[in-house]
Amino acid sequence: MKNYNPILSIFKIILTFCILTFYVGCGTEDSTVDCMPRSNVNASYSLNLPQFVNLNIDQRYVVLDADGTNGSRGIILFNTGSQIRAYDRNAPHICPTANSTLVVVDDIIIECPEDGAQWMLRSGEPLNTQTNGRSPRQLYVERVGNDIFITSN
Image 1 (cartoon, rainbow, N blue to C red):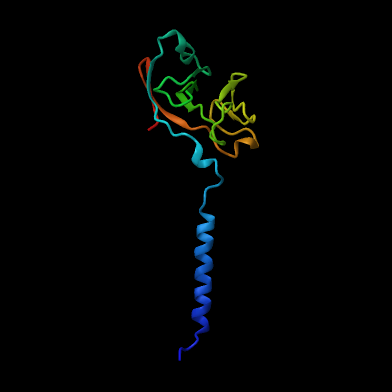
Image 2: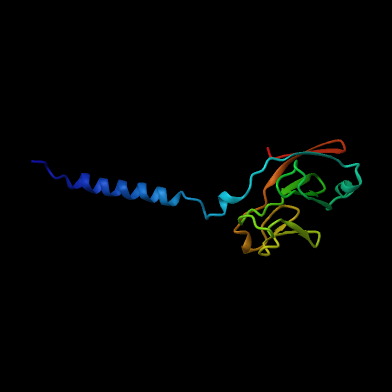
């Protein structure tokens, strides 16, 4: 006959509860986290070209459509005055739709036309609740003279 140990039973219950809490608590925030495309970016541009002249001026930007080297929807480039930032044009907070390619509005805001989510162009900081607290994916930019090299790391 087996002896019943109440302390061991309580320990098993607590251990089971902790394990279940860990697995339930470690899921993704929602289903949109996994559906944002992570396409590779490997692009280089000369700031001497006419379409990039704005990047030689502080607080100016250039929007590029996808061309096979700069992601599945293109990128947004912005001159902060001290550096050039690059943002992936895929909306980071929702699964891709025909209307979820990020655009620049009023020269200072990145916006998702699908739902009106907005971010600061200068920093990528979320401006409203539609962003779900997510910032646009930033890409690595290296400037060498008048050339910029953009990669997805």
